[in-house]
Image (cartoon, rainbow, N blue to C red; front, side, top):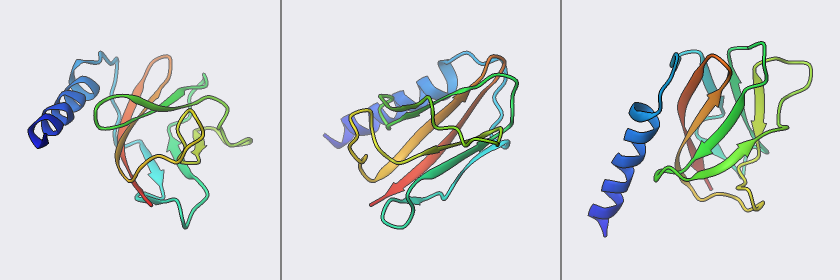
Length: 119
């Protein structure tokens, strides 16, 4: 059981960080605040990333690589390069505590990072 979870974790990391082709990966130019994200203290987590000409897509993945949330209309008006997430999955349920990966993808860049959720 534990070996299966460890194997799934490493496969997810391999897929997200090594096998997905990128024109450019910029880890230092993106962050989430607060991280760790405590859903009891904060109403949302903010994704802050490099402004771009287009509106990038933001996806949140669990440790096994499943898409937990896709942020489409969560951009903060009047600011470029900022979006918010309330910690809920596509069905509107709060996600479980743990480690999550996110990817901010624009037309000419992909930015990846980690996010910890506390409940």
